[in-house]
Amino acid sequence: MTGPFGFPWGTFAAFLVVAGTILLAIVWAIVTARRDDGGGGDE
Amino acid sequence: MSSMAIYSTVLAAYIVVLVAMGIWMGRRTRNAEDFYIGGRQVGPWVTAFSFVAAYFSSVVIVGGGAFGYRFGMSTLWVAASNVLIGCTLAWIVLGRRLWEFTKRLDTMTIPGFIGKRYGSREAEVFSAIIIFVFMIIYNVSVLVGMGRIMEGLMGIPYTTAVIVAGLIILIYVCIGGYLAVVWTSFVQAWIMLFGLFLLAFATLSRVGGLTAANIQLAAIDPGLVSTPGVWGWSGLISYALIVSLGVWGMPQLLVRFYSMKSTRVLRLGVVLATLGGAMAILPYMTGAISRILLPTLENPDLAIPKLSQLVLNPWGGAIFMAGVMAAGMSTFASVLIIVSSAITRDLRGNQEERKGRKRGSQSDRRDVMMGRVASLGAGLISLAIAYRPPGLVLVITAFAWAVIASACLWPVVLGVYWKRANRVGVFASMIAGTVVSLGWMIAGKPFGIHGFIPGVVVSLVVLIVVSLMTSPPDAALISRAWGEGEV
Image (cartoon, rainbow over the protein chains, first blue to last red):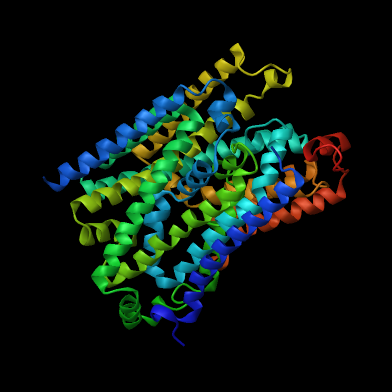
């Protein structure tokens, strides 16, 4: 079965992993900032 | 203006910027901590993009394109693992802990961290020797890659290209130390990104877009667009792991974490490094598409250089060449400073540091000078080997990264997460990882699996089993490494 841009879904999923990773980085940064600012951080 | 004149103009401007940055950063380098880790004062943008630049060498860009040419779009999974494991998870899992541990243990090198965390001078020396030998070999491969690209794109002799590129890097590293490395790498990352986007955009325009490219590739061989396609699972997974998980044991990348000015740098840094790392998609995808435009290439390593000549005008080609040079130079410079620190800090031993000398002292200034001399020596050795690389060296370059990662990965990771890991376990693990990864490659990669995989598996098992079978580490040592109150 063909996915976006003519990729098979098994190959296109690599783009989804990259997009998900960017999302993970943003969420981790926000959570860490909230935790550090609430708990005093490391500086 | 002729193509050669355009290439020379762009290259000359690029070189002037690099040397100027080296001289400028040299003024800010006053002690050993400045020379080796920038005085722990590096911010998120420079940390993140210098990480990306050091990660993706010219070998990865040209080699990644070659893999794309041979194996098609399934290589996009290698890029995905680069971003997820090599960039984002490395920052999340190791960033904060390495920064904290190296600060508490007052160390500025990975062998130094291993030595102090485990209370093991033998593990410190062993890791420094592995880093010294295999990093120089790795650097030879980076220099050879740069030389071949300049030869292919500009038509200048390989030996001239190697000497020019190598000497320029030596100048700015010796003068400016780590600060010159990270700031030039920051600039180089942007040049690299711009060059890769330029080539990808021009290539896609030439073939009529991504959908058209996939249809044409599938017409050549459906395995060029499917996963694992013509590559197969064992090759794809083992290669993806070595170039992503391997990062977790590579000192020239780990140093970015403990040169940050605070752990707050991690927040913005992880997002920037992830976005920068996502560019790993471009060389693999562009290499795969080049199969349509260059269907009869005998040597896939020429896919990216030939493609840039085919689809870019001379100015675009010159910028792309600067990008590829930037990738190689940033990696070479990063490795050079690590080899220098292995010689002057770890192999020589920090006798004066152990006596509690103050920073900025006469001895510290002497350390900076020694660092410069060691960088120069290591660079000249790399240059001499790359000038006429023996066949054996070229063979070893294929697994230099694997050996270093096999020796250092678990001692670093478990060193910051598992208090029970001890000096006997770590030394046994490093030897086992090195021997198995080397032996596996010498045996001709049985089952098509890269030596990195058995190397890291054996290294992990040995570290855990031997640590559990021997006495726990000294409580005072663990208390110092984890900080008071955490034990």
